[in-house]
Image (cartoon, rainbow, N blue to C red):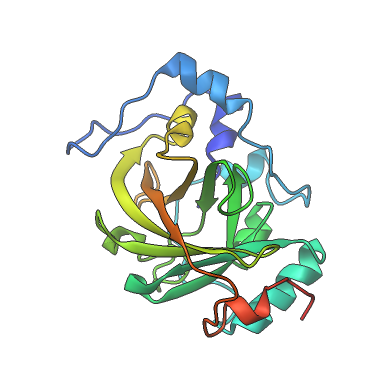
Amino acid sequence: MTDPAASASLDPVGSPEPTDENFEQTSENEDAIAAAEANQHLANDGSVNSNSESGEYVQPDAPEEDSNLDKIIQKIVKATGDDGMIGILEIPEINQELPIIGKWSYSLLKISICRYKGPDPNEKGNLVLIGHNYKSGAHFGDLDKLSVGSELFLTNAKTGERVRYEVYQIKYIAPDAFSALKSYRGTAGLTLMTCRNNGTNRLLIRCEQKEAEPTPTVTPNVTPRITPFKTP
């Protein structure tokens, strides 16, 4: 996942002529205004800079971390502190269960998916999550396999509340289409974003909240670990 915000300080990043109806056009003026909020959750670890955006896009092969959830959480805590993980995203259709890091940077994206914009999980507003499009299918590598109606579950690490979401729209956007990240349905929205394989556009998956499960809920590998979240 390359940083859309990096293009805001340079010339706008061009996109190829859209070849399908899923390409979402946005207002250049609205994108410029929205760009001011693009780095609200940026981690100051030095991994995001002008040099990191130079060169041709190369789709990464696989994350550095293995798929053991406990080990991933431990690495998040080591990198960001006890409050570094804000929740868990489950995408059953592509067999993914991913800890959500509250801040984002290129270093953190190698560990797991990150919050790019918005509130904590299931809270008022639109939560935008970003992740790498790994060739192996890890993280958001298989996100393009989802379709309208696909089911996801989002758990808040502090409250333990687990809420079901459904995909209602799939779009492609330009890297600097920041205003597209404001669109959501209902009180609490969820948007997933990753690079497309050529790196020139972003894949945007918009999801709407459906219902919360009664708490406490015993869900393997999810609820017992983060109700409330404690350092492993």
